Length: 325
Ligand SMILES: *Cc1c(COP(=O)(O)O)cnc(C)c1O
Image (cartoon, rainbow, N blue to C red; front, side):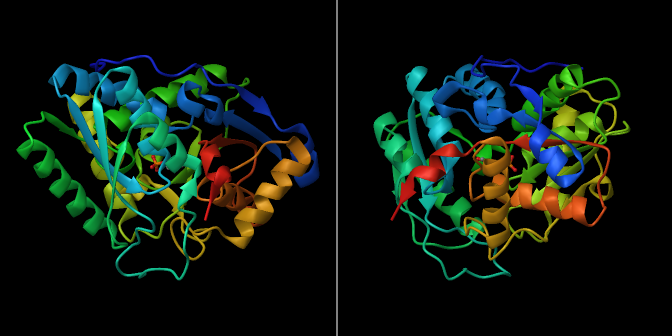
């Protein structure tokens, strides 16, 4: 297998520990992988993707990174910080509430101040706010921003939403190996992760493919072709790195039942799940991703759809807790 070039951003391996009080409360064996404590710029899952993405950016000789996301995007904050330390400019096309076309725009206004927006300002990230629209429209806004920057004479490196490229998938393929090395004897029967732009889930599922560990994604936005999207990402990673077998769409396990009213809209079940983890373990979750995924983990235990030793992947997103209107 060919290992792509990498820069070091993670203070890893991130901790893995058992949730004793929660486990006895739920009568289950639940562990947690703490990517919320991954370090650089307040941590989160995106750093694993950025270690490989930034190496490609540096190799390309670009002076400007263009990306996209929601206004309170964790990815924009983390890539903004990585650009800062490598002395590159960073610009992002953002929408307050991007949504999936078929589902339509939920009736909700997300917090537009504080949180990641406050940090982006400190990092000198240029935020280009577009009116709310679909994810496809957000991609179009990103493409237009790339053109504007190129017309200004910049050498641009274009990064899609959430850093979900083959490099991002590779970062999480490596994360799977990190978990396997830390796991107690016998490993995990199930790994539960939030899934949205897809490379976190795709990388982990690719690593555990054909093993005794099931990777279960809890969708945080109601994307209709989630499995096709994930399989496409895994296929490109396998091709670039020479992996013999790529994850197929029908091998991907995910659940849409905990999306709530849509991406970026907090859910009642997510709030209850967050409160339970806080009350038993003193660990906060973010309302957009990890809370919904944790609600999914609890729901799947209650349905007896998952059992044995379970690992919850805490993807971070802590700045969202400080976002305000
Ligand atoms: C981006 C993000 C996710 C989703 O990861 P994807 O790889 O985009 O699916 C989950 N949790 C947090 C906190 C995130 O910022």
